[in-house]
Amino acid sequence: MKVRIDEELCMGDRNCSKVCPEVFQYDEDQLLSRVMVDVVPAHLEAKVRQAAEECAPGAILIEE
Image (cartoon, rainbow, N blue to C red; front, side, top):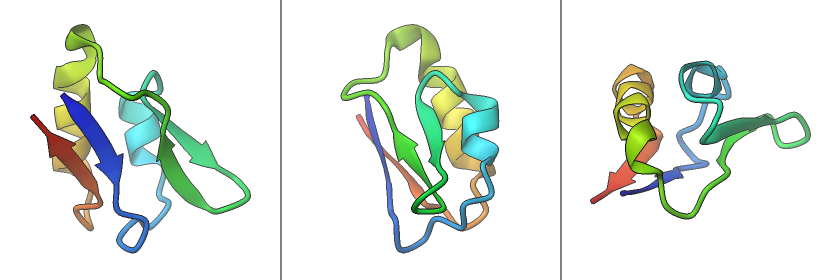
C-alpha cells in the first residue's frame, strides 16, 4: 500500500499524525501533514486506513 496527502485538501488538523505517527508527520513550516514512508508497512495499514477514514476533507489518498 502507498499513501499520499492532497495538499490542496489538507486542513492541517494533525489527526492523521495522532492516529499513525509512524507514517504521518506534521510540517510546522507548511502547516500541513506529510507522509514519511514510500510504502506503508503491512502492520500499519489498518492505522493508515483509520487515519484516511477520519480525515474530514478526504486529503489522505490510499493506493493499493
